[in-house]
Every structure is written in C-alpha cells, then in structure tokens.
Amino acid sequence: MTIRPILIHPDPRLKKVADAVAEVDDTLRTLAADMLETMYDAPGIGLAAPQVGVMQRVITMDCVKEEGEDPRPMVLINPRVTWASEETSSYEEGCLSIPEQYADVERPAEVEVTWMDLEGATQSERFGGLWATCVQHEIDHLDGKLFIDYLGSMKRQMITRKMQKLKRERARA
Ligand code: K1U
Ligand code: ZN
Image (cartoon, rainbow, N blue to C red; front, top):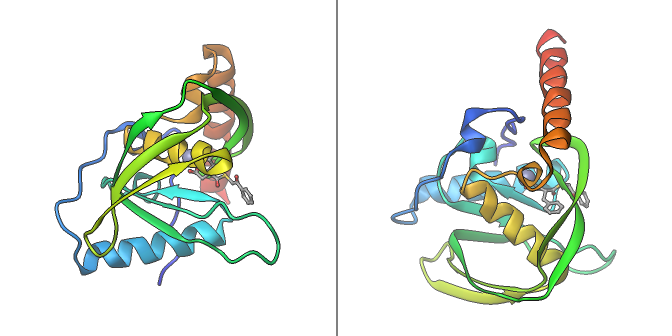
C-alpha cells in the first residue's frame, strides 16, 4: 500500500466531475487500499479519489471517533444519495485539500446512499451524524465541489488566497 500525495486547492482536478467506475479490477482495489492508507495517515475521516488525482467515483470513509471502538474502513464506488432528510444539521467541516481551514456547512442531517462495494455488490445504508456530513462532503468531491463553495465569495476568496500562498511556500521548501 502507498500513501499518495493529496492535491491542494486550487487545482483544476478538484473542480472536475469524476467518471463512473465500470468494473472492479486490481487497479481499483489498489487505489482503494492506497486511499484508505492515505486517509488514515493524513489523518482524515474521508477521502475522494480526485483528491489523489484519480478522476474516478471512489470514496473512502471511517468516521469512528470513540477510543476503543473498532475502526470501520469503508470503500464506496459510484456512491449516490437516494434520499435526503428535510431536517438539516450544521457541522464545522475541514478538507484535506484545504489544510487548516474550517467553516460551518449546513447539509441534510440524514441521507440514504447506494454504492457498489469492492466485490461488485450493490450496498445501501442510511447515514446520520458525522457519517452523513462526511459522505455528502466526499460525494461533492466527485462532482467537483468543495466545502468552500457553500461559503460567501469573500470568505471563499480569502481561503483560496491562503491556499495559493501555502502552495508557493511548499514549492519553495
Ligand atoms: O474529504 C476530505 O477532505 C477529508 C475530510 C472529511 C471531512 C471532515 C469534516 C467534515 C466533513 C468531511 C477530513 O477528514 S478533514 C480532517 C478531519 O476532519 C479529522 C481529522 C482527524 C480526526 C478527526 C477529524
Ligand atoms: Zn474534502
């Protein structure tokens, strides 16, 4: 397994719509394993394939927070929201592609998601709490959308400028 570099905003690949996966093969299994390792290493609770420069509809998640609770690594291929609650909830979101920036984002509090697993079987589950926030954040990545796109343009521009500066500094180091 390999830790892959995570793209930092602004990057054109983070604004593109990712392609649906046609079949699960060894390349996809390697991508999924690398994404889980990259996510845990970051550390993060989610990761979408475009964040590692792969334009395919694959996400990983593990939102287990409690110490002593078993981890729940999840790989979701071609995930789609099939139902969303009218009730919303607000969570202070972060993003591994926008380091050290956080903002409150309001989203449906519960969602039902259908996806293909690594065996090629269709799965469906209702998510709530942090899992619901995370799965929506990750599916947004597959559609070229970032959490800062929910903010006002002033705040978004300010964060984008900070990220441009961070990328310049990292390139010089
Ligand atoms: O997609 C990503 O960029 C990953 C992102 C997912 C996410 C976080 C918060 C709300 C919605 C989606 C992250 O994992 S940022 C890091 C983070 O939240 C975290 C890191 C370590 C422990 C706990 C949380
Ligand atoms: Zn993100």
